[in-house]
Image (spheres, each protein chain N blue to C red):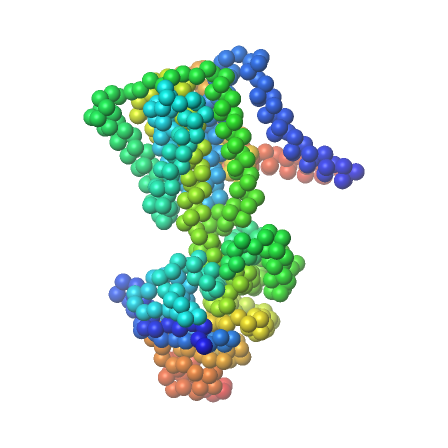
Length: 245
Length: 316
């Protein structure tokens, strides 16, 4: 059964077609990669799913129920969480408070303070941020801030997690750690869609890849199918990718 | 020894406000009338500034609507003063402002930045001219007489409003609602995507802060005996809390209190000593304060404390 289904998703910015008639479906427990050149509409697609932007046309179903048209906080409470490409942590709150907000207001609000605190600490531990739980978010390193965003999203107890460029700007060691984290999040039963330019990460963790170009879906398939697809190589990956595979 | 010091420090932090409160409450027994009246005015400014900070501090939405909410309270008092007892009038004045803020907030809190500032100030002007038009054309008056209440009673009620306000502020700050409010100020989009109903949190806080402004207005009207729309909706009252909060420093809870107290006293002092130059001196002080104390009095105090402890370390 698909966790997420999108039909005919379309969004214009003035005269610019940002996302054009995109269909997508994501099954439970999958990790789906979303790739494409800059300006292809990947982040816009995330914004449509999470309710940050209204759809021009099309519908989005989450677990069979329509979520398009709902406000971001309602979509979050249904069980769809996200991170942001340009980091949006709460800079003057501690790492723990950042995560606590997710526990307080996510899928199961009304949790007791003790319980929320215990859960937030567990999530920080899971994300390897225990040591900096009292640190203000603005004082964390880039890699830690990105992990904090994921931690905050996880604290809302999502069934579907949208990760927008978690690996950009990280060094190779940090990328390896991030890949490991994504796999272990999935092991906890959370379905993931990730936007990523680091191909190594996409190839390693994704079972299926969707390629966007000028707002249109130009290809979809397993990593192997994608790297050998003529259109994708021509429009995005380039000849070296073929040579590498 | 360290533990003892921590305990004494903590209990003094708890007891100091109580002591000051008891001192203030017993003041009317011995102090002259003038002091009581001055203190009432100072506490009026404190209440307006602190309730302004309650919403605008954490969210960063600069509201210039205090004069509107205050004025609604003033008119409640003028309309019901002869009919109802004082506590009821204060409550109704607060509630009327609360309802107005709910309505206005639901309309405007989707606006951000400058647009919100402009709209809230427009609200003051709108109410002023609407009431003026109403009084001239419908009721055929310009001003109204408000039944007076004795000064000590007004002082005590202002103190009670202040105490309830501080209690509300502490409760909100320590709650998950307060955490959400802070998150909105730091990144509204992220807060919305973390499950916070940002509009509701903003509108409710805006309305609670308006309640206290309306209550203060209803009470203060009894001091003035005569009011008209221009007195009730005086635009200056919208700017005062902003200036006082900046002057005191918004980083700490006590910043706006100190700011409002000193500012209000300064105003009184300058008006009586230099009636002709008072605005000029006032403006100069404000400019100097903003240039040299960007974090307000609280920032200045903290800097002085820091340099004194550093000096001590350097000596040892």
